[in-house]
Length: 110
Length: 117
Image 1 (cartoon, each protein chain N blue to C red):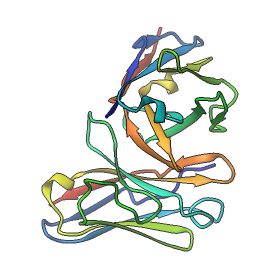
Image 2: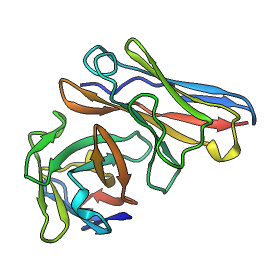
Image 3: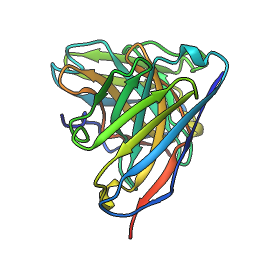
């Protein structure tokens, strides 16, 4: 099972919106609504930002939203803030190997 | 609130066995059902290694299946990872994490393990 495919980097100015894509297959993203997203700042524990494709955990800003179309999931960050600068990973259940992470996307706030 | 703490040797020799322990503390530890290990090699992304249920059932990534064992000791609120035949490519920060309903919901701070002679 190869990692899910994410863009290596995405950038935006403060206040703008950005979208991070996560491409998989019908065995993972396309077959189940079990996609979650994690924010990872250096030297910190990753943080759950979205689960079940589009559900925000308690305490996560509504500037974060998730969606899915076919075999691709997306995380959108609206009203970009400096504190959003981090690495982001998608994660999905898969029928072949249980679970798999995406390749990771570095978000830069210009 | 539940807290996770990884512990174990920070240095392991090539061809040896990497052994780590994850200790859970805090309220509602009885609600932890699935325990996971995830790692991040230097400069690379997150890799899911596997999960173990408190009943002992486990699922491993094919990338590690031939050389990994995970187990749970609920009497000690601990979960362990054993990774055999390690090489320099196994150098990474190893995270303990809990999961529920197909998502990882809580992570430890991680522990760096270096494989070197």
